[in-house]
Image (cartoon, rainbow, N blue to C red; front, side, top):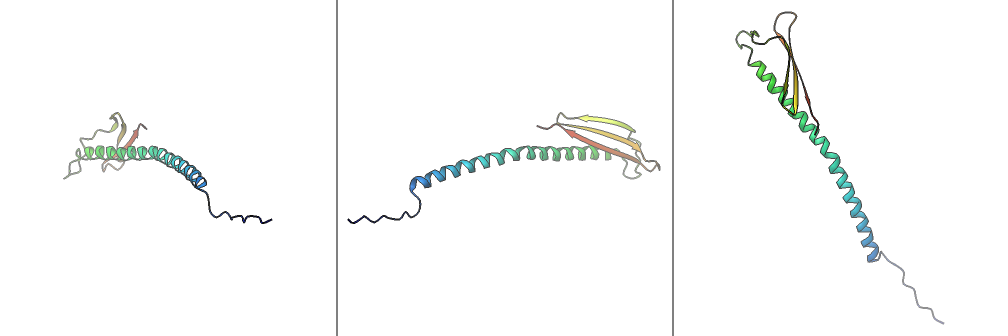
Length: 115
């Protein structure tokens, strides 16, 4: 009796390839979805931080207009604590005299609400 020769299996069947592609695409979609969700809060935080820095810069520029350029007279700047709110940003401004009498210090602290 002669037995038929068995063909060796070379490669993968089409069903195995399709199943592997489906599993890979599901895993890739999950990874991409997680990375896009994880990136949003960081982007929003950095956007708010940049906005806060610009707000502080605008406040400082406004206070600089109160100083006379020729004599550096700071008579228009009253010593004290001030608060500014824009809805998103709130700034605490502290103006105090220099101990040597040469001018005034301005401290600006800006806080913001997270989205």
